[in-house]
Image (cartoon, rainbow, N blue to C red):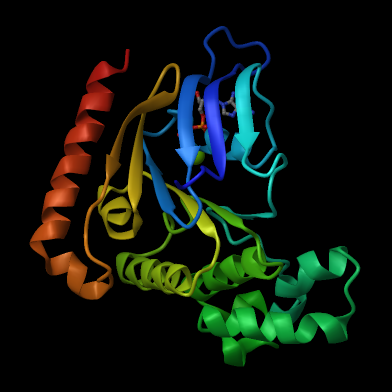
Length: 252
Ligand code: ADP
Ligand code: MG
């Protein structure tokens, strides 16, 4: 049996000064080796849920239980690439390693390897302003992966990018997963993105935020651009859109 990497049990989180909790009764398993997409309308608590998983927020009720008794190493990717503008890609991507006390010499092969995985092998010395929006996001993903996290959390990372760039970055993520990178929790408000990336989709509803339904996406090992034109994909999109509509219909 696949023991969940983490189990979220009846989590509630209320922000100071708020009467209605941002999250209440959140139940969810995170499975090792899985890409879970969390989908829901704006303001339903997706970012708050991700921050809870990352340990950046504390629940006021319920449990977040980790399989190994403590949280694994976690990488976090935000909507903005948040690169240091004065520093080249090597310095930006090596930052987590350098903060952990690693020398430049030790960090170099790890940085080179992770930049190659996101298609930026030849841009080690580039400054952020010399890169396109998509390249900056690739660098941001590389920085999150450089210390080999077991769990990668992404909060609407591609929402500010044009559609073609977004598709390319979706394929970068699929490629990382194929090579056995971290388990992934990917927050999005895009039905298409979740249908393309997810093994499982958790749909949230708002006020208070909670998981309204879960969908397991059954399809063969084949992923990639051809999926977008397949009947499978159209069916998954329809199922997810229906779930989202139901969740929004139940919101106050
Ligand atoms: P989403 O990411 O789904 O758009 P958020 O998790 O950002 O939603 O927000 C969920 C709710 O919690 C919203 O009503 C938002 O205004 C509120 N909220 C988020 N962060 C804070 C905070 N730091 N303090 C107070 N309220 C917050
Ligand atoms: Mg958000």
